[in-house]
Image (tube, rainbow, N blue to C red; front, side, top):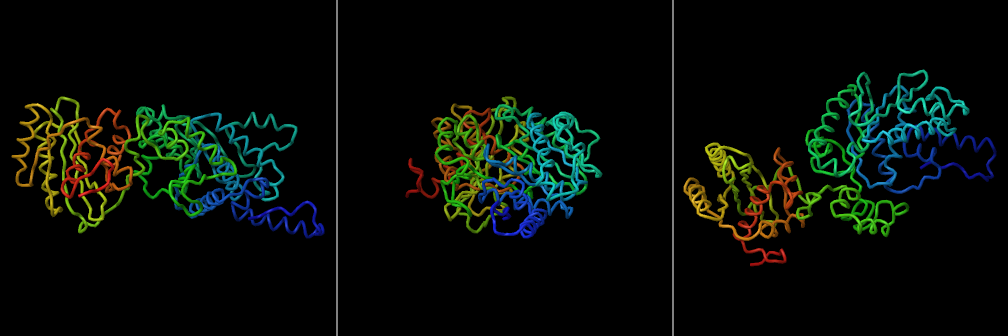
Length: 488
């Protein structure tokens, strides 16, 4: 950490200048030291340093041509945009030929970052650290005119580098970039809840913005997670190697630098302030804005961040396996058929290995279920397949027909009663306790999205099937009481 010497010192002028030069040299090499120089009054905390170190890593990866992608998730008003703005100026000082494009849902935010960069570039401290990176027309008398003229683009004198700010959906044709920065591409929950807007934002990000990247460019995103299917959710699905820095306003468990229940930046947002915000926000709002964990606006039965996504599991530890099927009433009803393969583990956890779901004609549905059952039987030692029996004679006949057709696998009908929300309680309790894992697969996104919207979502077939499987597995080893603790 670099600090300027105190104004009153016993050092002579030559020694003071030498100390300053040493600080400038360090600032050129280290981003956190650079921030200490250009912002001498900056409140220094572990999270500011941790983020700075990761940004330094990002730049190193970028200069080595590794095309890094990094995401910063942090609560509002904690200084993340300011730090990224400083990073853009530090990168420009390192190499004035680097072309940066900054995109956000708000033109106002882009202009604000643009003006902040101009103030940094014009400052004497920046000039002391980086002498070569300059803007056109640096006379003090023309500052206002320069800001007005360059509210969307800054070009570095004598070099090919530049900074451009634009809005998501804005035109960037003809522009190339070496550093892409996206700061909150979606305006808020209302916009994120619209699949049309999510699709439009994703198309702009992939087709327009991502298409401007040079062969060594890096992508830096600052995100508030409003929805499981937001641009970040989709990006990670396609690029799982993305480095994600998630800083919750209040720690939910003991971490490297703080303990459970401690705030992220108490010098700026103390716990009392955060608790006040939590009282007036919905749980979905608090989780998205401050904790960076998107859940459904309609409820918090299934906090989706509590699911654990795993790449594999130890089959020798499986105690019992069930494929539970919730069949659509007909192929013309608009409902989905869902079949969930769930394992009860000897260590007390639950693993969901596979989910098939679709709107199929009866013949295709039966073929798909038969194929799934054959595959299950080949890998599961203790296995059965269950079919939810809907009320009425039609539901009974359908379930009995399925039991006969799948008899060789150990097939049973489950005559369900009571509200779906009540039947889902034991399963929801296990999810809330972090005891349910999902094997990574293409079905994960739709599965999680349905859970986050339960019980107000359009569809609940996957929740029904998972709840049914969980309850049947519980019956096989004991019963799950109302306190959600294993007994028997």
